[in-house]
Length: 184
Length: 184
DNA sequence: CCCTACCGAGACGCAACCGTTCCGTCTCGT
DNA sequence: ACGAGACGGAACGGTTGCGTCTCGGTAGGG
Image (cartoon, each protein chain N blue to C red):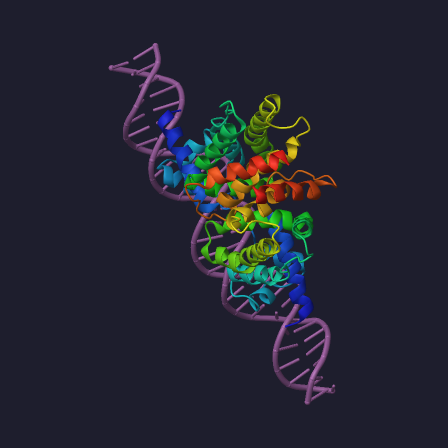
């Protein structure tokens, strides 16, 4: 197996996934875009489904780090900025909602996304909140589960769902309001 | 055109859309599920795309009402409860993310969703906030755009994106935190 | 310098789908 | 009672997709 071929397939896979969506994703189109024979693809993965699961897990492992700036505001700011950067990428902005929608009807894909993206991110965000509780910045009784919805929801809504542009100060203003919500 | 046939097609369309997703939606499958000839479908809409646009706009018109309970807390509570109920429906929970994902690459569908769902809902929520400002419950300088992200984001995240169940008290606790965020 | 394993290209069989057309039946309004 | 037209069902030609397979070419290790 030549690595450059694998790379070309991987790149083409995500471009094709973004432009066609998971439902209409076609192996022929991926091969065409990658400048590769279909056999090169089937030599690596047994099916379209397996290919998707493998490539998505592969790319997802990249994004696991818990901000630790020493303050709740700093940590949240960093957490949001990371997410903002990730969802800024045009491919990600198209692919992420698509995979999440598909996950509601494809169990294996759902488990993959959960294990490789959602759980690590949720754990990371939960750690962030627990640090703040340990520092006394948030009360002991803070509702972590609900807090996580505030850390992720508004930004995801704005960037991925309604896809409206964000002003430079957006993440800062968002941070202030999330902190207020967490403390309520 | 017989109304009961149109109804059967409409029902089958949404069931099929939920189970297959927009990308794999097939006219044959809709006809089969509706117990209807394909001609009955093509007699009503010229293409799958047109059919989707028409049926989605049709169902979306139903959901336009601005809560007006007299208090910010009551209005938000009502707004969230409405959304919660709507996204509780198993068909909606599957279809909505799917259509939103598709909208990133299908301009006509995006415009339809924007005009028939997003704009009315945003306008309704903005009115809610302006009433609160008029009553003095929120400061004049309230950032409405950002506030709208808090009204919609966390609940959508919880119900449609990560699809976790919500406790009975969820909407109440959510309301408290959103109010705190709005006032920050 | 050759052997092996991978390569790009693309044909193949099979299945699904689109949009159209036809059939014979059934339901209306008049 | 009748005629227009919508009905379910089925088949059509053309296209696309999957996964397999066969070519001839090419890169590199021994």
